[in-house]
Structure formats: structure tokens, C-alpha cells
Image (tube, rainbow, N blue to C red):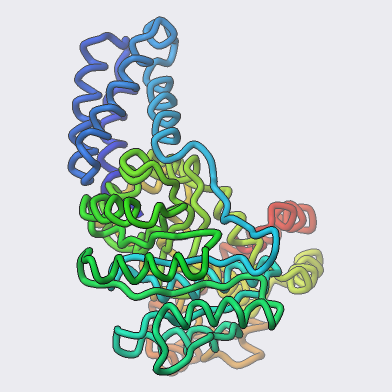
Length: 442
């Protein structure tokens, strides 16, 4: 997410940090470069212009020019202005005084509305809510079936009435939700390939019929400035409450996220970072600004770890660490805990400094799969007593896992390093990691 933008900004700001003295001249040169980077990322040109002007005003103050570390201070100013541009604070979804809360999901076809509806339902369910999904997209082939399948996968009912109009389905869903003690009704509406009058009239009719407490506009982040133009059109007709950016795990240049709040005046409430139904994050402007500037997002990383954290397993691991009994089975278990947090590239992307990797550098998520295959190809005794793994056993394991002996040797070296680290950590170190909500193997 924002890898290219982050890497280019890091390159520009690195030059500034290396300056012994900051002057109006090198500030102006740096900000010209920052503006160019923003425009390359498809940020709206007016937004980029205003952003640069705000940074310039503050950067030319005496505080910066007289600072001992002016480069770092300017980075802080850019960080603060970026947060302000993205929305300054996190905005929650509305909650009805009298349930159910009705959430209307709108957007163009292909933006990911149906999948987002299911993701939002799952997200709310994890918060102790009782959502109901309404399949009001009766035009796109298999849209209803898709939502029904997604709902079944997360244990959430889907309301649909074959042959009825979208307005009737949405109204019926709200009534059904009220009768069945569902406190949230999420209405998935139909989209088109582009904004047209027919689509807008229909979604306006649904809005009038169900009186939603929250209208969310879903937009594909990879569409760049088209995302902003579409958002304007929907906002003029629906006056939506917030936006959702999908496909943020793709090669989105970031312009839509940075421009949307400033151009439409509505907050971004969620970002979708993958196809899986757990790949949904509440939008935090400060955290995203930190990611863009290569500062990482350790808070979100810890939150993801806490969601997957198994206290019972951690207690058992702590006991084994105390007795210096960290085995390959423990090693495998810790890798699986990390996998639950999402693609390795996304997890590592939350660490500070990851934007400094060379362009084109990638993280091989399949490496974890190879490690699992190798350990699963061992006998139980071999996992518990790795010292048994002589040359012939390693050949057998490589053949059984579809890998090479070199892969097995590499794994064993990694395990030995992990084992040494765990012995060093001991009881106190494991508890320290647990207090952060992190798996002990991170």
C-alpha cells in the first residue's frame, strides 16, 4: 500500500535531512519535488497545490530555520499536514437510537460493494453486533448468490426475495431485521459501469424507503482521479456519510485516498486491504500518514496480533520457554500465528523503514508455505528432537515436502537462531511480548 509514493517521498526528504542548513531556497526545491511526487501519485492538482502551500508557510517559520534538526522538523510538518489532509481523526459509523441501524452501501459496479458489505458485517459481528445483510443488487449476475455465500461463510443471514424490486427487498430487510432482533441491516445496492441516471434514481428511492442512518460510498482505490469524480457525483445525489477505499493491497498510487477528503468533504471510514473477509481496517488518518512517510504503523500491527492472540497457547509456550524446550512444533505454531495476521508483505509494511527497500523488492509469502510443508514432512520425534536430522533424513524430508535439501538446511538454521533468541528471552521476554499482544515468535 503506497509503496511507490512512500519510496519517492523518502528519497526527496532524505536529501533535505542531509542539508547542514535549511534555507528558503532548499525548502522551495524540496517542496517542488514533493509536489511532483504527489501529482505522480494521482493526487488532485488543487489538493497538492494547497498542501504544499500550507507546508511552505510553516516550514519558512523561524522555528524551522533556527532549528538544530530542521530536516526532521520539516518531515514532522509534512506529517501533520498529511494527517489534516486525510481527515485529522477517525470517524465512526452512526448508531441508531432505536435498532436496527440501517447502512446503505453504494458505488459503481466492480468497486467491491458486495464483498465490502460482507466484510463490514463480519467486522460488526466481532464487535458483538447482530447484522443482517440485504441483497438488493438484482441485476448483476450471481450478485445475490455471492452475498448469500459470503454470509454463510461468516454465519450472518442474508435477506432476499426473488422477483421483488430492490426497494421492496431493502424495505423488507429492515422490517425483518426489526422482528428478528438484528441491530444492523446492511443493504448492498446495484451499481453500473459508470454513473447514470437510472442507477442514481434507484439508489435514491432505496434511501427514501429505508431512511438509512449511514450511507457508505465504496470506491476502487486503483481508479485514481476517477474515484474522486465519481465520489462527487454520488455525494451530490446521496449526500453520503463516508467513503470506503477498496483494493488498497493492489498497485494503487494513493491519490484517491489523499484527495478524497479534501475534494468531497466526507471522511474515509474504512480501507479494504485484500480479498479475505478479515482484510478490512478502520481508517486512521494518523496511521496512514505514518505509513506514507515510511514511519510504519506499529499500532495497527499490534492490534492485528491481538486479534489473533491465543492466551492458552501463549501460556503453554511460556512454560516451555522457561524449561528451554522450544521445538520445531513451537516454531511452526508461531509461523502460523503470523500467517493469521495477513500477507507477510502487509505485516512487514507496517514496520518503520520498509519504504527504504529497493524498488521492485518483494516479500515471498510462499516461503511460509514451504516452511510448513518441510515441518509437516518430519516425524513427530524429529520435530521434538531436531538433533536427529542427519543427511539422509533431510533428503527424505526435502523429497516429501517438494523442496530441496538446501531449503531444509536453511529452515534448520532459522530454527536454531529462533531457539537461541527464545532461550535469551526466557520467561520475562515472553511475558513482555504477551503484554504487547504479540505472538512470542514475532
